[in-house]
Amino acid sequence: MSDHATTVREYHLSTPEAMADPNAYLHRIRAESPLARLPQLGAHLLTRYADVSAALRDKRMDSANMLRVLQRLTPAEQAELEPVRRAVEMWMGHAVPADHVRFQQLLKRYFTPATVDRLRPRVREFTEELLDAVASKGEMDVVRDLAYPLPANVIAEMLGMPISDREQLQAWSRDILPVFGDGDLASLREAQRSMLEMHDYLRAIAADRRRHPREDVLSMFMAAEAEGIVTEDEAVANCVLLLFAGHETTANLIANGLVLLFENPDQLARLRADPDLTPQAVEEMLRCDGPAGVIGRVATEPVELAGHTVPAGEHVLLALMAANRDPEVFENPDVFDITRTRNRHLSFGMGTYYCLGAALARMETDECLRILLRRYPDLRPAYQVPDRAPAPPFGHRLISLPVAF
Image (tube, rainbow, N blue to C red; front, side, top):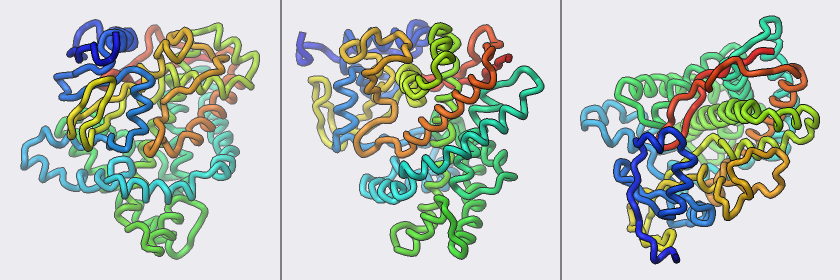
């Protein structure tokens, strides 16, 4: 049956089937309706690899407005949260396309292969220090003790923050989380408070970097400010985004990746026997349980998707997690195989909005897992089922991950 012969079916995410096994539910949607309708979200959904990758590259598909969470509030509540709205509108990936490209080209000056290589020894040091702190206990919570603080330390280093402030940075990052999801009014107020505190904090560092530049992101932004490329407000807002995106993404990748290894002991044994498989293992973790399961886009004009015309202004969800398990592209797509060689997953996106920090996230996860498995050859789970919180529409987030060694 051709795309044009298939109807756009409606699906509901709150059914027991969808919640019990999102991957199986997405397999079913992909087979039945390549373009699906999610009435409760007022959006369409793409699940096939070919359709998702085409939409990622399509210039008519704009980054979706993250501020939909604010649009559900009353006018008075929206007015109260105006500072959050203004800040998010300056974020790369959420700004208008011309501004996004301007920030992206600027940050590419910093996110070079040389920068990632220069940070590698620091990532090793941070990982060893975090593991030293729990070594005598014989147990740890991977989320709290390793996966969260490691990328926070790296981002703090990149922003030029002193080590003593890094716990504060983690707290701010956690507080900002509701802006990215389905936050209620109380959590959005807290997110705004933390975001404004962080803006003030970063402005003080920015003032210092104008006088005494270093090799960090804020120094690069201040040089660009002097050239008239960005304003201080834009620099500070995008540093908040970098903190959050670079921190949460890598933390989730490390923790989810470890769960996949525990759930596939044959693959864990293979990785222990051959640590040089780590880069391939990281790619397979990204494919099977990447940090962004679904991302949003908005059609800026009528667009043909999966054989159907979607009108301008329509929200379209791209299910990266479904595309990454499309049997047309991946052999045995539900099998976690760290020796998989053809692995062109879409977990970091592609095109204009490709994740700038992809190389950094890969490197951090690679170094962290190598050191962890080398230091603790008997590392094992100390939980019955992973402690996960739902991250709508189809994702999840690990709250804790107790392990013993």
